Image 1 (cartoon, one colour):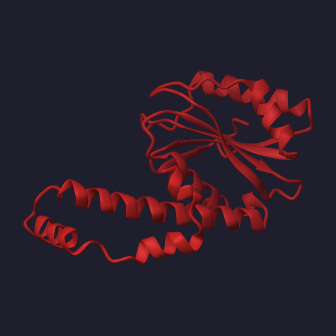
Image 2 (cartoon, rainbow, N blue to C red):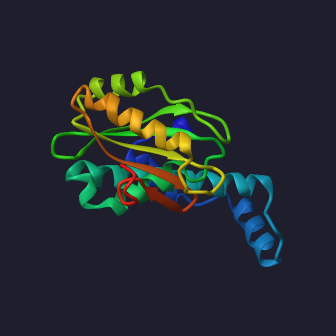
Length: 193
């Protein structure tokens, strides 16, 4: 996966449009036409690789859109980026989107990785990360692999702690998103921020 992140846009495009190996393509056609649940492992690997490449292209395009103008002017772009980034994960991650004074994306960072049901988040590290990128504000996000968007009591307490800690260094928390599959809860929209 890291290999795909290092590829140039031209390399990604070439890989997307490259013709599959003829034997693998024939296997896929026969498998799917016959109603088989899946094709051969080599075919599945090739399909998975193409989907990963397409996902990377989409994430880069969405990030470029967030870099151009105020992020919250197009909240759907942020939501789509978050879905692509973490909706499919089987473990929790905590993400910071660092914004400049005009609310444009400076950087997106997966700052913590956890287990199926929990991620340890340390306010000190969140503050350090925001200061290192000279962020004026941040968007917080994490996923719930369970598929539930409802914030836990721990999510609410953590959000309040991060708002307080970041306020000490003049960094505003613009929102906190919980990603659960294709659904996203916004703390700001729910009046929880």
